[in-house]
Length: 170
Image (cartoon, rainbow, N blue to C red; front, side, top):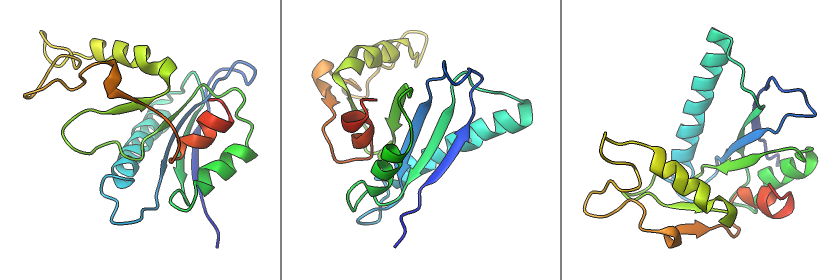
C-alpha cells in the first residue's frame, strides 16, 4: 500500500542560502475516531493553509521564510509518512517543526517542547493579552492555564516530530 503525504509549500522571499523554512505538520490516520488526535490538528492545519493561501493569492503576501504545510499518513503504523519525507528531503536549514496532531483537547493548556524552548514559550504566554489586566499566563478558570515550568512536558518520541527532533536536530 502507498502512504501518501500531502505537502503544501509557500515560498519565502529570502534567497535559498538564507532561508530557514518553518514546518507545520499533522498526521491524518487514527486508531479510533480521532476527534482530538489527529482531527483537531487537521482542522487547525487546514485553517492555517486556508488563511495563508488567501493572503498569498488574494493579497500578494509572501512570507520571509518558506512555510511547509505537511499532512502525514502512516503515523499510527510507525511514523512512516513523516520519517520517510524527513529522510528524503534536505532540511538542513529548517528553523522549526511544529507538530499539531492534538491541538485541542480538554480545558487546560498543555505544552510539550524541547527544553531549549521552555523560556521562549513562557515569553509568548506573558505577551498574549486576554484582557487589559490579564495575560494568558495568569488568567484562570478556577486554576492557572499553566502552573509553572514543570507543566511544560519534554518531548520524547511517538509522534511525527520524532524524525525532525531526534534524527534531523530541528
